[in-house]
Amino acid sequence: MTDTQIDPRDKHPEGGFPAQEQEQPGLTDQTRPEPDHGEESYVGAGRLAGRRALITGGDSGIGRAVAIAFAREGAHVAIAHMPEEQADADDTIETVTDAGTTGVSFAGDLRDEGFATSIVDKTVEALGGLDIVVLNAAYQKDRESLVTLETEEFDRVFKTNLYGLLYTARQAVPHLQPGSSIIVTSSVQAFNPSPGLIDYAMTKAAQVAFVKALAEQLGPKGVRVNAVAPGPIWTPLIPATGWDAERIATFGTDTPLGRPGQPAELAGAYVYLASEAASYVSGAVLPVTGEDRAGSRHDPRQRCTRPGSRC
Image (cartoon, rainbow, N blue to C red):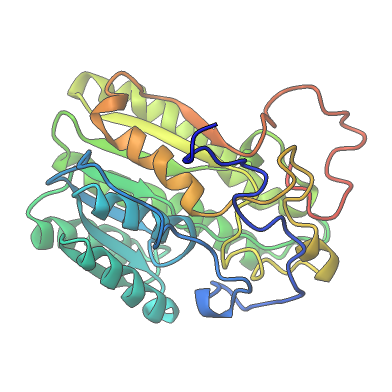
C-alpha cells in the first residue's frame, strides 16, 4: 500500500450526526459537522483550463464542491443560488477566486423563468462565453404520505428540479460550442425511490430521461450531456429535509462502506464528465453512491425500512 492509498471506510465521518433541523434551503454554517467540499484536499491539474462554467445551486454542498474543483482545474465559474444563501455563495466565490480564476454569483429563484434564463446571459457576459453547464439546484422534503402531499409543495419540487433546469438548459444551448458539456445532478432516487421522497424521486427519474433525450439531440452538434447520480451525501439539504433525529443519526450508514459520502467525493465525477477524458461519454448516468443501488440484489420488502436509508 502506498502512502496515498486511503481506506474509503475511514476517509470521512462514519455518520452518527447530531440531531438538527434547518429551514430550506439549508446553510453550511448551521450544518454539523460541516460538509467537506474539498477546500483543503482538492488539487487541480489544469484539466478545465480556460473553460467557462455555470453551476446552479453552487453555493453549498455538491455545487460548492464542483465549483471549487472546476476553479482549481482552471475554469472560470459562475454560480446561481437562493438569496438566503448569499453568505454561502460569498464563501464559495472567495475560494474560486483564490484559485486564480474568475468567480461570480447570481441570487434568485430558479422557479422564476426570468431569473433561470438571465443567469445564462449574465454568465456569458461576465465570463466571455459558456462551455459547461451544471444543473445541480434541487429541493426535497420528507413526505409522510401521498395523501398529505400538498399541491404547493409538489409544485415547488417540480418547478425547482425540472422547470428551472429546463429554463436554464434551453437558454444555454445556443451558446454551447462543440466540445461543451451539460451535466445534471440526478440521484440514486431516480432508480430506487424512497417512499418519503416520492415527488423528489419523480423529478430525478425525469432528469435521467431529459439527459438521455438531450444527449441524442445535441450529439450531432458536438455537445455532450450526462448526469451524476449521488447516493447519501452530507450537505445542508439533509438537515433541511425534515427528518427526525434517528434518521439524521443513521444517514448513509447502510451502505457497504458504512458511512455517507461528502461533497468533495463527487467533484471528480463532474470534472471527468466536463473534461476531454470523457470526450466519448454522452447520455450516461454516473453513480456515486457508495454501492450499486440500481441493481436488483436488494429485497424490495426490506428496502428503505431502516432509518437513514436512501436506496
